Length: 320
Image (cartoon, helix red, strand yellow):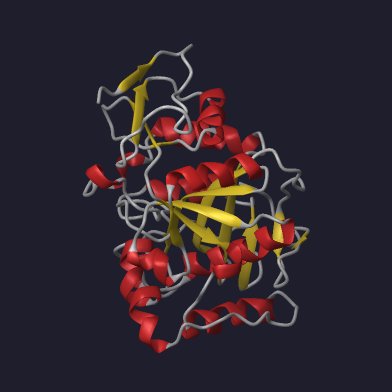
């Protein structure tokens, strides 16, 4: 099958109508404008390519999807989340635990895939050498929404921070790598990718969740909101479970918004341990069609509460 080359004025192929191989590589081109990105997500496509390559558009089959109601956490992560719940000033929300048997999948063993290779506890040597300066510090334990998008995407762009196939391992992202491209490194978040998603963030389309420990950014993730759909793009961790805490709070917030699922892109054992399941591409596109134009509350910015709600940013805090 010949790969479609898409000129700037050409439409992207629609996987719902045009044949796309199971690997998911649907088209190539040079246009990565916000308008092109909007078209792609509406069609169930996402960009993934390396330096020196054209923009490659993917729609894998099957598609890994995490339904918010199916989200599972290990006992250790549930304990960590409750610490943040208490700091948020509300009653901790019970989290289902998968038990210690799954700890190797959802705990520290998988963190090298979903975080960075140098992930460590706050204040360790590896973190102190690579952490941003502390300014206008939020509370000691805090999870926020859309307060540090530029920092989050910059962290995710560094070699070793994964793409979301939520928690998978496109090296350098937390989502999984498209099949044939396994083994590439984190350079998929190119300057062009950073620029277009940052522009989308300013337009209210791309969003970040940040985990703060000791007043410093310890982990986070970013993705795209479209109606009642959320597409995970990448996450990073500088402290154990920091990106997973961000994910847990994101799931709660999405449920509060009425958004039922997160697109995780590629199937991985780690994603399965969190409750994600592979969905045939045809079914995923049906879910997308049902949710992309559904009414949804506007995205805000501030501190995420234990119940999934949002409150104003911590006093003195400024977005960056």
